[in-house]
Length: 456
Image (cartoon, rainbow, N blue to C red; front, side, top):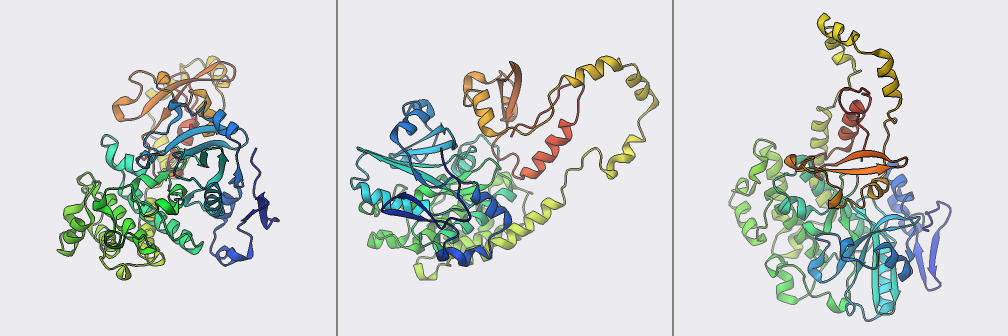
């Protein structure tokens, strides 16, 4: 199930009346010059937008079981998001809209199809929809590491590193700019709950916020304290309203708190921006960088919509900070045991240690090592099945709870029992660092201690 986009096809047809334009269509050719090779590869792997049968989604969610509901899955607007597995597509997020939100099925299909055209690694791409009877469902990519809202406000003090907060600001600015270029300028209720983290730990903007019935488009799900001034005055949402919400997201990123935009704006204008900083970040960021990010927030929170920056300006302001953090990351390369910089340590091994190692039964050691499976990369789908969808019943008591990580027990083919450690979601913002460390440890094979596999 689920075809993949072809570079030779200009269109993908979902129904005679609905033509979905692919990234190769002339209407979007102007963007291709700035798309990186990684972006092209990622987009080509996203399944084509399609119409799903209700039976498929019913089976994928075990009959829309409460056990499949994604915690915090944008439930504030009375819709539920489920996690499910569809053959040929993999793990997906399925949003089941409240029955009366979309009385006009055609309008729902039109909006879903328009958003289904979008393909970006900065978005949680929409994979399809379902319209049958009174059901209105959207199917999107599954983001395993939850929402920014959870990590900022609800995890028990596993703080988000400054580098990741800057990355969120930059990537979401890119997402909004892409949507703006594609004429999807209205994003409803942009907030930390609409930003999710993919399996590489990178932030993405949910596409669910781009779809809303025009009859309900003047209603905000969030507290009116956080709505733009123009909405309070006119009841109308405009593209500049999205920029206002982005500014509020910046404030929450920096502070780690829900702060009314007007209050945050006043503090920044009074040159007291550092009072907003998350105390958990003390000593882990440059004051100049934080000031620049908060100054950008203040521009977005201007009362007059015309005084707010456009999406292109958001990128221009956030990009230098992101590049600066990337250069800092480059200074913290994890060196493997084979690197020349640590070879000098091998020469200092004591004779006593060598004698001890010589006493190890070599033949038994070789036999034991040969029985250990090779170090490898697992897919998330494999682990999803191994440990029964990360069921709490598979958690090993005291396995890793003390450092806010969880250890699960599962069984591979051949009845091989394994321990699967699921790290706190943002402990590893840099996927490359995680892979490097895991790979270095994965080379170790000994009956003294544990062997490591790459479980990501």
